[in-house]
Length: 314
Image (cartoon, rainbow, N blue to C red; front, side, top):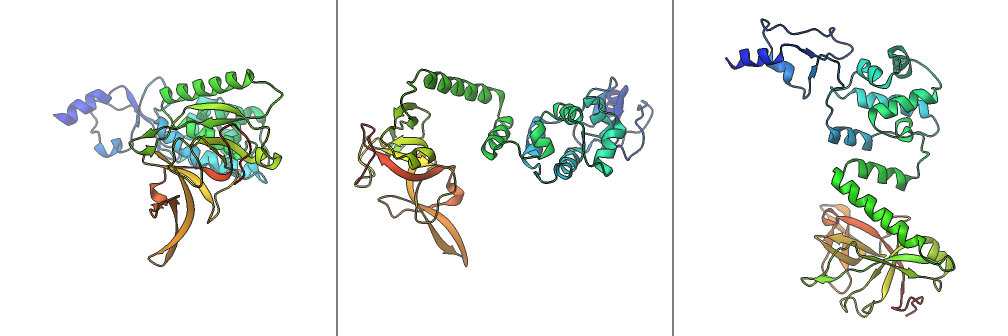
């Protein structure tokens, strides 16, 4: 009985076959429907030929795995296209219909020996897959940090994207109102919550004219110390300056977050089961935080400011 209902429901729908499989056909109510055909999600599509319902999370995940080869972008282009076509919900025929690029053209790009491709073709396919031209080509025209930001945002729910856009516009407005005669940096202002320095999004601009030029060039954020927790290393209201142009070296002070708290730590290593692993030890404690418990590595410490913004020397 259940099989009859499913067969009836599927009447008037098509089974999308991969390009290498049998042609599409319409199911008859009198045919037996093999349940194994439903193993791949979204295999059923409406007769009008709508684009298969590909899960956004799946597309976002694929976009994080795309290759990059700025010395041979055609090679990375082929590999990246093939990654999408490995998804059961996307066939070469469907991609052709969705993008408006002829099937033969796409087939030649992927399986032929074309040494170049039209800009209009790449743009059309990029739009169809909802990714940037740079990502699809793997040409490396985006700065790595910009590329990472795009990928992270793409995987977020819409309400989070709106929040990020608000924050960016807010920052742009603040900095547009600042005097062009000074150099500024954004300062995080965390608070003590339940005995720890809690993570926060509260920021304020601060003049850093007294900071040496080489430090200015690397510092991307400051963190105001809200208590005497890190004395004598840092006093209350002093500001540590953080850079993220590279990973912290062993023995360096850096800033990480774990379990909702901000920690100023020293990067160390221990030997565990015969293997060298990195851990992070907060200043003034003998505690170590294993790498697996680190939520975010904000950066490494490159100096500090006194509460009035003057370059710190101690």
